[in-house]
Length: 250
Picture: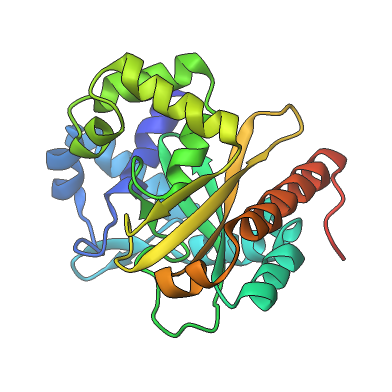
């Protein structure tokens, strides 16, 4: 299992500024021996997760195949799509479904609202862990031991410090969000935009992700906030129920 994790960690090296990697990159950035790096590259290439290029390796065609499958059949997406469409239709704002994996929050579904200015953090782009209504509402529902681990790993991060300079302050801030049942943030990821997020849970009531409504401060302010909160929290509750029942929308 450790060997598999080490091999898959190679995929984390791909970034906008680093679309192609080679064995030297793997060895220098992950600290792997050359023999291990070559073996992992062969196995990833055989699985279609990497493809050989003139300057090294790029992500392979299997990734886009999996992305298409996820877009069409992933339960969190199929259980959410009609509700996301309805939120956009009722408010004109952008609507997002985001999921938690490891210590990363990433948007897996995005529906464009009537506002033309794009979001800085659209589908497929990891979000800052301690900024945005989306990330904070997910953090708030982690198990205490998970939240403590996140805090200890990131205690020096300025964004975390703004939520609480000590573990006690940070955990109190998360508890306040949890008691409220939703989170609102203003301008934390996109200047001039407000986000409202509510948690989505799996069949065992563990935090799975969030549904978020994002719009310009002016558009957001034109609505009664209680109305928006009900729209988003009701949608989150329906998605959670569908996940538990394994009944995607038609």
